[in-house]
Amino acid sequence: MKSFKTGKGAKMPAEIIFALDYPTLGEASAAVKLLNKEITFFKVGLQLFTACGPRAVRMIREAGGEVFLDLKIHDIPATCRGAVKSVSKLGCYSTTIHVQAGREALEEAGKDRKNGTPRLWGVTVLSSLSSGSPMEAAQKANDSNIEGVVVSGSQVKKVKSAFPNLEIIVPGIRPEGFEKSDQKRVLTPSEAVRSGADYLVIGRPIRKAPDPLSAARKIKREISEAAE
Image (tube, rainbow, N blue to C red):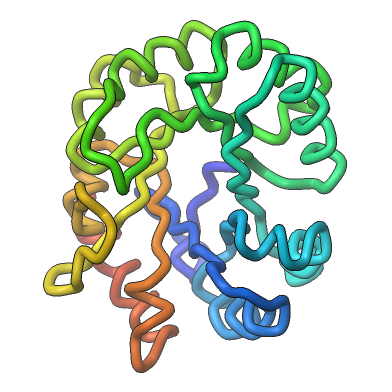
């Protein structure tokens, strides 16, 4: 994909992925309709997918958006392969797989994809945890031909420097002044961009804003200015 948009067609240094962390399809659909003039990439996580299944993906695709299906796949190699094959049929741009599943599972997971989709993004260490070795996990992902890795804010620069070909996806993005909540390691949007992030997963700072559309626009301006 990597055709990052500002809403006016200009290129962005990093793409916002809005986290559709809603319990119902109606709430998620309303958010997509509100934000899709500014944001065209949406994350469907376990909460929404468990409640609505493929309908959530179809809703986003019909609105012209791209889907990051964040399933955090972690199982035996054959099951990982089957899961990714099913994700491919849904037309998702990307999905997540735990690097701890092992090299065989990571390699097996990518075998039935068509045209390289969905892109596989390896989960290194969950952003709500404070332990683990993101660099070791990123090395495993790189050795297994995974396209990207999900890393915490504190590790972005180090991982990008060591593995420049990996796409870097960063959750836990918090604009200045926004509470950290359950995220242990956070960056502001501008800090993430300057550190080398390619995709910023943002939920609460937009979802909980009094005016979510204005909040999205403000974050996009910050991202654009960070690259200047």
